[in-house]
Length: 363
Image 1 (cartoon, rainbow, N blue to C red):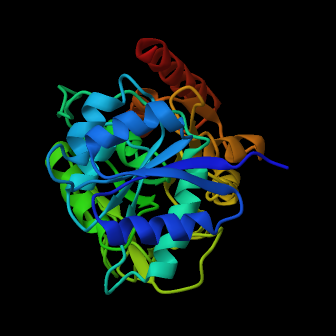
Image 2 (image 1 turned 180 degrees about the vertical axis):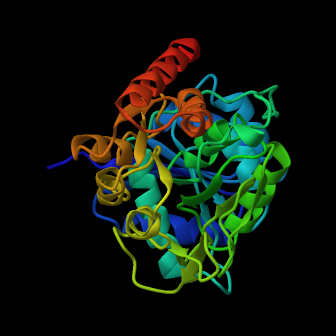
């Protein structure tokens, strides 16, 4: 029999603890080994119970979940899944080292959906590589605007899941203000994609916003696919490209799905394409990235060393969809360079050199 995943539940609310403990306790491969009512109690329980994963309420009296993470993770690198209401504190906690977050049940999220999502997140977190808390995000000095050096049009698509909010930020903050049009799928609860876009918009050079039906894919703008809508890049009747955001079935277990975005790129985009697949559990995006590569896209997979969960990039690499594996800085370097080079055999060699040199700098 497979070993069960040991879970510690940290929440100051009696009702919330009961919902989480009862819900997770009913999942066959999960075992709730205990609970804590605040940060001080949690530190003691971690030492005593040695859980595999901890769920953590962001808003607690006394020491908040965010403050707890900052002091806790350097000493105890334990995978933490946040359980959060709809607020920006979740992103601060992810920046402090949490693996994932799940939205608390409310009028838009039922208890059943909450428990199902939380259980999947805990299972994914149990396989995650815990990252040390990152330094405060800042816009670094970077390359000048590409301006008139562009050789033709380019569209970039990026997909990520567990661990992706911070990994995507690491890529985005290294890109110039006039990046090619970019569309991003980040698996995220309903309500959080707009706040995530707002956060990136403050920290990055380019404009970042949540996508809506019909938005133009254009230079200097990155569009975040809205939660619970499948997002595709389609041709615009007026020329160029726009996004289509529609309700539909889950694909590869997700809505929005990275596979749906990447497949739409392969089907509809007729200019230079770059596809980037980043940290996450499962294989969403692998088949779509392969379709992009077959249509001539330059494809990048985040490497195992820098992934929180090396699942989606691994699947894409094993399927033959990934041309280069790289860390976040190297992926950004490739994104900047792609427009300056025509995609022939010579330029691909030069671009690979750029990526591998960047990897050496990161390490």
